[in-house]
Length: 450
Image (cartoon, rainbow, N blue to C red):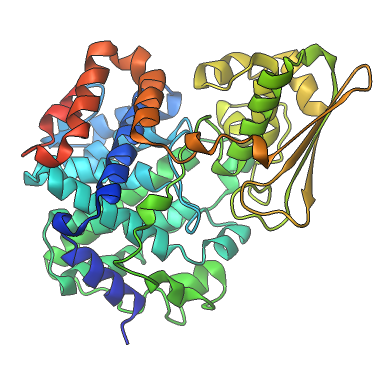
C-alpha cells in the first residue's frame, strides 16, 4: 500500500495537461487571475512593503519577476514579495479540507518557477492543479491541527509549493516523493499573530513557497526524504493534529476528483470563516437600507462545528480596539460592523474605519454565539433597531456565486481589486492572456504586466 507521500507524488508527478477536464482548466485560470488581482491590491500594504525590501536586501538577480515593480530575481526570492502581496489583505482563496490559502503559495511559486525554467502556460496550469490537490489533501487533518494552535497555511502550503516546484524541475516520482518528505520537516507555524495583530501571518505562505523551491531543489540534487512524513509516529499528522485517524482520506478519489474545483473565493478582505457572516450583513443592509446609527444590537449565531462559517479560530471573535489592520482583517465582528456602517468592505475602507468611534460602537453591540444544527454556510443574524424592530438574515441570503467564481465574476473582481493599481489597459491585457494561458509558450507577458 502506498504511503501518503508516495501516492501524492505518483499522482502529481504524472499529471498531464491533456488529462484535465475543461472545467478544471477553467478553474485554474480563475485561481491564477484571482491571485494576481488580490496581489495588485495588496502591494501597497505595509506587510508587502516589508517583504519587498527584504527580498531586495537578501535576494539575487534572476529570471523571475517581482509583480508590480518589474524587478528580476531568482524564483526563490521573487516569491517572497509576490506571495505576501497575494495574502496580506486576506482576500485570497482558500479550500475547506486544509483550511489553507492555497493560491497565495501555489500561484506565485508556479509563475516564478515557470519564468526560471522556461515552462509553458500548459505547464503552469497542470502545476497549479497538482499543487492545489496536494496541499488540500495534505491538510486532511487540518481542523485538529488549528484547534491546537497551528495555522493551516503555515503547515500545508509547504506541500503545495513543493509540488509545484517539483513539477517545474521535472522531478521523477521518486525524487518528487523525497521533496514532499523534505517539506514535512520544514513546515510549521502558529496562530498567535492573529491574537497579537502582528504581521507574521501574511508571510506564512511565502515561507512555504520559498521552502517548496528549496525542498524540490534539494531532492533534485539527491536528498532522500521521509516516506512516512504524514502517517509516521512522529510525522506531520501526529505532531500537528495529535492523531492519525482519518488520514488516508488524503488519497481518496486521487486523480478523479480535483480539489481545485472546490476552491472558495473572497468577496471581502476578511477571513474565510467570516465570508458568510459578511455576505449576510451585506444582503441585509442592501435589502433594508439599515441606518447604522439606529442599530441597538447585532446577534450572530454560527455553527458550533461548521465546515465553512466558524468562530473557533484565533482572532475571529476580537471586537476591538483594533491596534492594527491585521486585527481588523481576521475579526468577524469588524467585518459585519464595517459592512453595516459603510455598505461594503474593501481594504481601503478597513484602513479608513479602523479606529472610527461609530464602528467601534457597533462592534461593542455585537454578540457572537455558536449554535447547533447548522453547517456549511448556514448561520443566523439578528439586527435590532432603536424602535425595537428586529431584522433577520441567514445563510440563504449568501450569494454563493461570489464564493465559487465563474470566469465573468472573476474578471469583475479582478478589475475591482486591481484596477486602481494596474490601470485599465494592464488589467485587460492580463485577463486576456490568462484567458488564453494554455496557448502561451511563456508566462513572461503575464507577470511583467502584473
